[in-house]
Image 1 (spheres, rainbow, N blue to C red):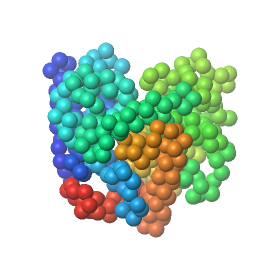
Image 2 (cartoon, rainbow, N blue to C red):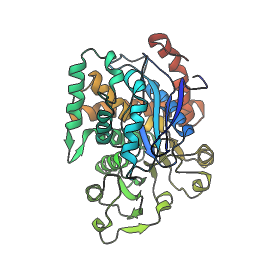
Image 3 (cartoon, rainbow, N blue to C red):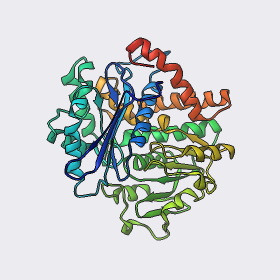
Length: 396
């Protein structure tokens, strides 16, 4: 990969003075894919790292040795806004940002929800900004744009037990990553304990799928603190008690559920930690408190490099974000391009199969190379990008 992104810009809102960023790391077939996040303190450096991660996710889901489906790889990009999504000025800021970057959204950047934003909010703001869709840059690559847009709209309208299919897709991929790691290690699902940071779109769906597989969710952290129970939490009750930002109404807790400090999710007794909220969640000081065997990165960039070094020395396996949470992006494109339809069983089966193959290949490569899963994922990407460039164009 090139050392520098193809495009990097910072926009300053003329109304509030807040900043927004856009980074296009790489174009493939003339387009880059990556979500738009909103959080206080979001920086250009953060967005640059996320855009590079999207390039990797696209490459990891393109296996040159397997028969290709209709969806073929795109490049990587990311957008970010430095604002609390709960701020009364947040929505207006979002609309003005989208208007400012409209030429890129119309031609090269296909985006969607990310941390702090839901797809319905993004869609509403996109329309107000005068755009057709947040993914309209991809439309020229489609065989039948009308049918593709209808297929994606149908998929977004599907709910499974009260939660949208679009919200469940990413969590299905994260959960399958956990299960694949347990299977490879010969660890049974029943009795395996999981602690999550975040019960929003990704964390909530992950908790549902892991609980359904027989794992025990023993702790969940949100903005108010950590909720824990050593025998397992009532996941469905917590999901039903969430607000739009994933914060749980404490009146829904059962007798015996514990309310602990916000960082307690790191040190509760659990085999698996799933950071599913913010970037930079685990630093070197936190690493010494962690007793889990696996950390599965549902969020983007949650484990700082110095922390991962400490954890690796202690034998803790970190499954990297570019693998674990790549299912959301892949589900969008599989659906839009027509590899799957709006049926949840079909979507989950496709996700599970793809994530199983991907996690298995990364863990096997790490074992063969004597390195970490993150290094293994980087090695696979480094091998695939020249092939993608040869077949579809775009700089190495």
